[in-house]
Image (cartoon, rainbow, N blue to C red; front, side, top):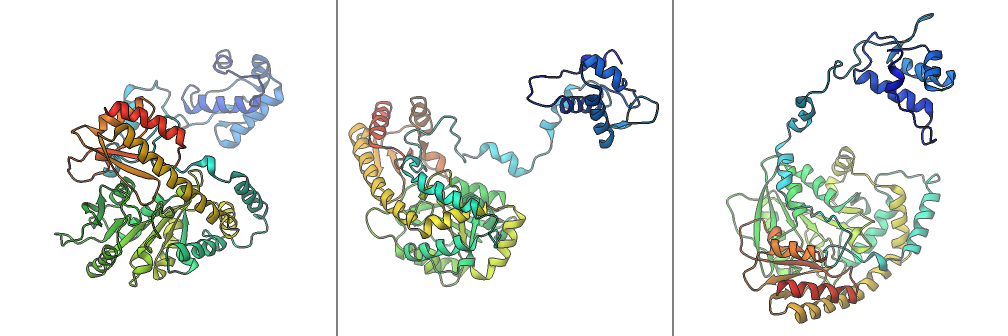
Length: 480
């Protein structure tokens, strides 16, 4: 073994990692892999140093490190010996069964369902028209934002409050939401989470017992569907009418209802005030809570938006959910949840238990971005820009595919729905578009009940006029 050991070691001398670190790591792997047997003696530090053309100190330090970790035993006057019981495979060559053992680990029923879920959509190429859900990061005031980040980073050491939910951001955000979305709350009711999806998961885990019934819109947001299922809920898909989710008595009353009333996902229809009040009354009557996802509710084009459900519901059963990823750009992924005041302490504990914590520096930067007026100025500018892009998209689709697609004109938001007039498989259509460089989501993948409806869910906010026109020509050619 004295002659064989140097041949098992391969040390790179390019300076990327110290020789002592390499020697220590490789000897450790030889021991745990069973190639150095328990009780086996290693060469002396002098012999190993000569064989590897290393200094004796380098070898001695590596052996001493392994001895400190318990991999080898040192005794005066004797060569180091491998400690007992450290091999992970008993020195045997790994069998096919052991290589496959990880594949056979038992999975939860939730994990086994993951491959069948249509959410989240995975795009293995850079964003392209008409990928939905994206803001135009090219139009974001990056220089101004970077200054906010730098100041927040410099203030980190002097920051006294290290709360998970940064009070200056809670106060700034509430001031904005109260004026522009009709939210009625106290600052401490706003919890800052890594993503809006994390917010849905947190609410579901706090409110639902396994087997409880939850309602979602169909078509609707796949992220809500998977989050509610992960919490053990029996999820019921509720069809829509022209006003949104339909409310009628069903066999099982829901414990939780998920809705997108500002711009229904994916139809972009706005739930009128009558249906909103009906939903609030229904939730009160059956004892259900409501998650109101206002994912892109900042962008309204035709009229002043209807006040949020949260501000209409005096019973405090509504959880208002928002995200900065749509109102700013995708890299700022922070979401927030406005929780009923009696549940703040419980949700703060749940937030910590689930690890749904975000950078206080990022929160501090957002607080300045909002209080300085930059956030509102950006929203107003993007609302005007996105409206012109919506109109450009409508014109382009009408010109290129008006005989094949029926487009629902959204009163706000960042995307639209184009329904197929003829009998067509929207899954195959989306695949053909993707091959041609145009991204879309098939409408059928957004339904959670059986339907024959087919169409394409298309984003317009992130794309300029030239990009919209080019992609529309490709889409028209393929649809025809």
